Length: 162
Image 1 (spheres, rainbow, N blue to C red):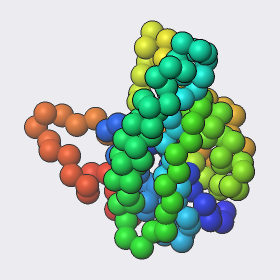
Image 2 (cartoon, rainbow, N blue to C red; image 1 turned 45 degrees about the horizontal axis):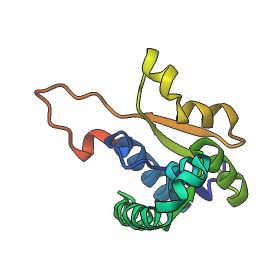
Image 3 (tube, rainbow, N blue to C red; image 1 turned 180 degrees about the vertical axis):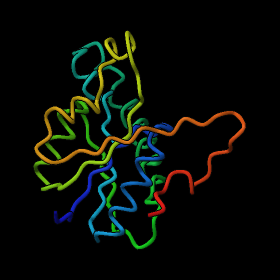
């Protein structure tokens, strides 16, 4: 399998650490371009609120967009010599990620999982599950390792040594 483009979606949570390590290593080993992507759901919510949100949305969205761009710029590959691009999208995460992957010809999506179960998963939905079910390309879902209180997590814990 030839991997030329990898998509790594981020919501800026700690659940993405292990997935970013995998995506970075895969990109470094294959010479692939790594897309680091965040989807801003708030724009879609504001649009659905209609006129009520119009009064303050433009100023608020400008501030939010700057904050998101700042956060996104700090997410960088953990491996050296990886070519990458930051991309910020607006809308529903599953749809935006799948549309971006198709449009850009992404070969692999590497994403973290929050590991929600039960009622939380039912109420919140699962972006990872939605992407896995509907993606036209392979998806690698990486669970953040569970660490006991006596073990301090290091970057070596998140990288395969094989």
